Image 1: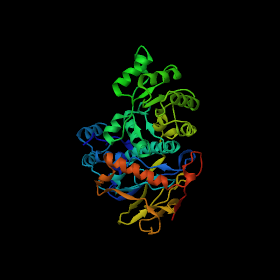
Image 2: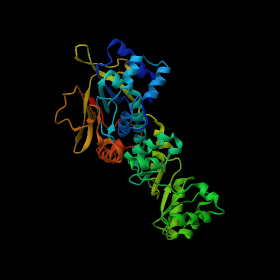
Image 3: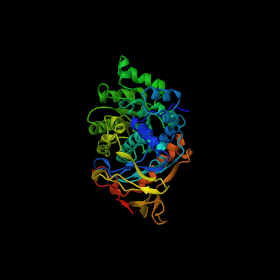
Image 4: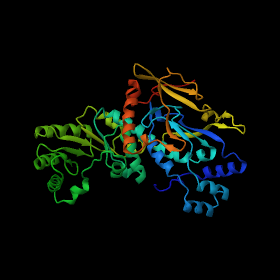
Length: 432
């Protein structure tokens, strides 16, 4: 069992349980829904990610003796509630979109059903994971699309917290990135890792040639040499003199990339290194990648932009109570009524309507029995049933499945839906 995630939450989750237990409502069956009211800054779709991480976090959501003792010393909740927490195990159901699926405004990406106490306490955990991972996956998908089939490497660990770096690498890989520089992401999630050297390695040596020779001796001629520490044309000459025309790649991390890439390509070709690839890394995002689409770039490396969601560090998802049982056991649909934050009440079933394999609508049926066989591709799937986690979402295999599913979902988008320019969502969300 991993370290407990029980305190990765907000105090009011526990105080709500405390008050509900005092009045006898804590055990009422409830349905909470996760959705986003809008997409950020005119983006045309979102990418749902984090399900595999969430399952692991819920499994580790345990209030051990040390945590209970601390909560008691801080007088956060009553002794009765502490007894409840010490025995807490999520025994409810979670259903939702597959990891890697696309979402749109109002898409019911996750549904958590259980008692009020066991479901409400997961709010912060659910949102912290899904909001971050989905923000990264959405940005990464746009970047991979902009790269038009060329590999993109995630290398943003130093621009975020240590845990977020691993999570970002996972989400980016699901959304189409080819590899990561983060070794823990490679170990935990089975993501290919890449990396050779930084400017410090070159500066450690008495000359650039000495640094290149050391690297080639260590890793062979298939390595990638960093060529912008001093003078790029001189570095290219040195790199090919040291490694020969079979050098794997050169990396450029600064300067006017469109013109530099073209001149470096011409120089490499003139030296006979026609198969040597060019890797570029310089604060790239989806727009700068798109601007380099016609340039002879072979591999892109992205750091800050992907781990920060490229300007949208959270996906805007919320966790709302949409249905609960009353004292007689009848189900009652509920929703927030404020004008700017209203949402449809009740549990929902969602489908993606396709015409000739292209998505046309996100159909959301209100109530659990309204969908028909011609509604389209079903979007809601079991994640946890009676507290039992489904293994298909977990580990490296779960990441691979999510990556494959994202490729399928993205291929269903109409062509306009893959544009980087601001616009309306790629397909409308229709509530029935």
